[in-house]
Image 1 (cartoon, helix red, strand yellow):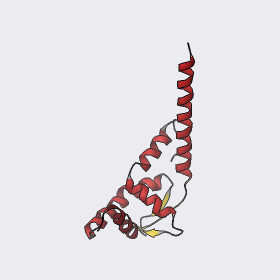
Image 2: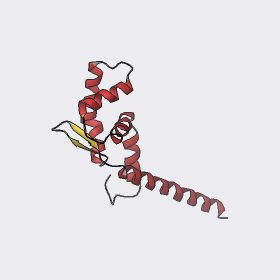
Image 3: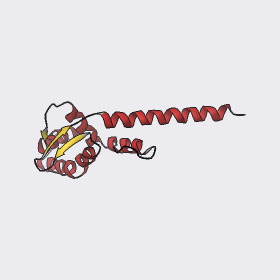
Image 4: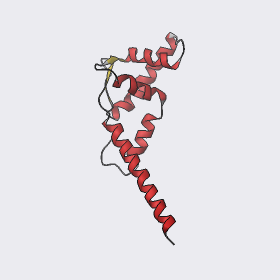
Length: 122
């Protein structure tokens, strides 16, 4: 998530990043690993969480979805590091998510203060 952006954009980025169940599953799986994982293996694991008995086609679709949509978004946010040539991905850090969440909390607190101030004004 890019620094020095207009207020609210990091919050929007965070909620967009976490809005998809496959991205949340990817973060969860990768954060628990100490080493990189192959994109195909990741696709198999997420497909197994998504469908009771995923077919080869389900895993293929998941791989394509990860490769072209979910992993680039997570990589752009600096949550994961992808080596698309080697077809490997690894978790990098929670900081972008934590910073976005902290900004969201601050925004909600300011909103509460503003609402309280308006209700107290005669």
